[in-house]
Image (tube, rainbow over all chains, first blue to last red; front, side, top):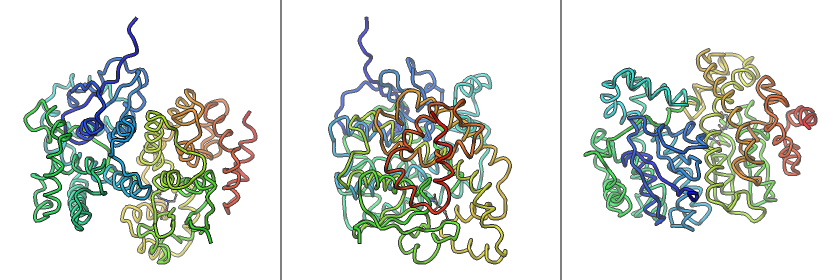
Length: 265
Length: 255
Ligand SMILES: N[C@@H](CCC(=O)N[C@@H](CS)C(=O)NCC(=O)O)C(=O)O
């Protein structure tokens, strides 16, 4: 009889949520098997031995990493990062002071709610649209049929059919610009990381902002604090190790459909 | 004067989360009832506390905290009293996942339907100029749009339909979850239960077609278990509406 299966982290190319999860794993020092999957080929829906798929099927994050533990799919990069940190007995990725922890949580929440959808919208239409548009109809429908979440499936379709909402596009650009400002302001007192020590907030913000540094260059220009912080984060061994998992030449641009743009307030 | 001041509306949805968390922890607080239907949350006094103009907000000493779920996490970490998060990392993950699912996917759909059916009609019969003036002082542009739709009945059939789809699906998923464990995401009462309870306790009344003894027995048993907690009873006495009374009748019917 085989023993209980060991946890496996399935991840896409190291950008956005997959970059967050991989780098957090390496920060934590936990030894887990990692497996690279091609998100745009629908491989997230072909992960074997998933007996509790709820969080895979209905993750608010969209096409993010999946940690499989005893058949249960564990998703959402920020919470995966917290899980790794806590499972390792406290790897220092979360501030210990409750108030600073609250500040970090708020920052991550705003990043997930505002920056991530904006970044995913800009990134997918710029870098993933061609590939989905070129896909054979039968292949696309095969993947679409496996996507349990109807709203996520709709985002795949919008992307394939290049249904760009120009108001959302403009709004996404301004959200990216706002986050560049926010990071610059947050670092204005000369601190090294956003909240004292290096934390999940640094990882999350880097993972969603850095891929846009070239296409949204104007928003990043003349921000010394931001540039230095981006370089510092990119140089962290955990981030380097995560980027080393890449299978494509430009992993930061390997976007897949992400979280939806807020439909309420 | 207590060390904690909480600005809240009725003990439901977002306001109910920190109220209940403080009550469970046994942390005394000064209550500042902020009436959403009188638009207290957009008055200068409140905007000085929370410039976003949303309820709730909490002041602890010098610190101002906003965002209901994040406030609960702070309350759990900063004060003594019973732990409201389990020790196990995977249980903690599951609870966080459910809270996000509610806060960012299911909850907004509840809000849209609630604003369309109840909140809008309750504030609508003021003169048009007064409504416009109320909208003009709302700080968040997305909230300005939402209030306009609620006040003038402008939610589209399409968006209401999508919200109804999400509510029906969300209830099914919760029913399934509560068949696996006695509480949301774990075997013990936690912030996850407080979060989800505050947005679902009214379901048997608001959506009897979707949530009932026959359709969702797991949800109903869980609602009853949570409802009977002393902290819930105590918190509900802080409401001004007849919410508590109305739901008591429903809960009493659950075996
Ligand atoms: N994400 C915020 C949302 C707060 C929120 O939207 N509160 C509602 C009441 S439940 C509100 O203030 N509505 C009135 C308004 O937006 O003007 C939280 O969880 O605290």
